[in-house]
Amino acid sequence: MEGLQWTMTTPRALIRHTTQCVLAQTKPYPLWAGSDTAVGSYMLDLAQCPVGSGLNTRTCNGATTRTTTAEGQMYQFPTSAGSSSELEIMVEAMVYLATNNSREIYMTVLDPHSLLENPWPGWSRGDSGTETHQNGYYIEDIGPSEDEQGYGHLIVVNDTQITNNPAYSLHPSIAIDSSGNTHLAWQDGRLYPGCDGPTGGIDIEGAYEIYYTRLRLRGAAEWDGVPEGLPAYGIKQIASSAISTPEQCEGASEEYPYAPSSVAPQILTDTFDNVHLAWIDYSFTEWQETIMYARLNNTNEKFPQGFPLNSAASAILDPWEAREVTKPGPLTNSDQRCVSQSATPLTGITYSPISISTGACLLPLQMILAADHT
Image 1 (tube, rainbow, N blue to C red):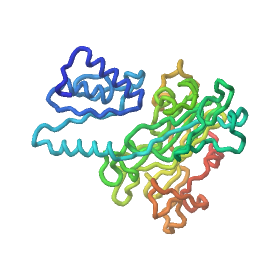
Image 2: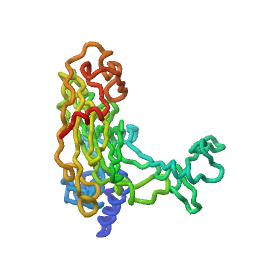
Image 3: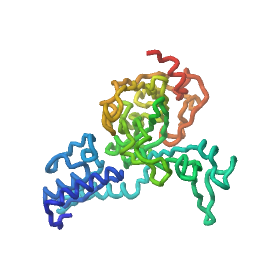
Image 4: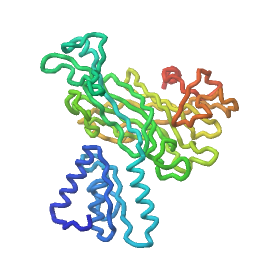
């Protein structure tokens, strides 16, 4: 990049590239040699958004595609012998990007009724929704709910990526409200890669928080089952937002390495379109695992008049409070615990059919709602 001859059109081209990265859900990670501040500024524009100057952190409020952060990172390539620590940081980051193999949340929309009611020739009730190709791979039945010939199809929205972050995103839970909005909750480790010890790093056994997003799938693009699904930027009414309380890096210790974690969310909506969330929390170390609950009140503001796409939850919803549902004491018998001693709360959750008085098992959310009359 240092060798480029910059012209007046180059910044505009970078702005276009940043916008394209946002739309394509691709995170740019430019390298900068450090000798030219103007070039470093352009690289920051590319990695984040073109709202700011110099080497200052960009202000990306998400109001438009141009001002939405690309969620990338600029790295300075060390140019002197005394920059070994910078070189180590850069190499570690590049290795993480190339090998972390983190998991993302995807979703697919099926319309089995359209296929059952208007089957294409050769398909009948009881047949598989996929076909096996002679070379050994399978072919999905993709297409609109009703194609030009009047036939139905099973997969009307193909794999649509919801999360896009180097950290792990796991255990999604989904609910649909009366207006057809899709509500999604999951556990996400994006807040903790920089922490020391077992909590930190882009690792499946790091710490997690509960994240939430609200999607409006209709209207973003044609429901025709094409590969790559719907554009994530065009379907998020509420952008991915942390709902649980982040304890940050200092929440962990050698004795309680997973103390900052909030995991295994469950979500549902009620008849008033309020969102109810429950999850297992490890921040109360004296209680071990604890069930937490939060309610997100419905807003009457409707897009596009009320708020733009990709708005922060805190800017749209009423303030919410995470409340403890259970407060069990320390347990000595591993058989009485919901999470087995042999599995971390992140990679092997096992639920035991025991009463609430013997441990913090994740109760069906309907039981929590029965006690919530506020």
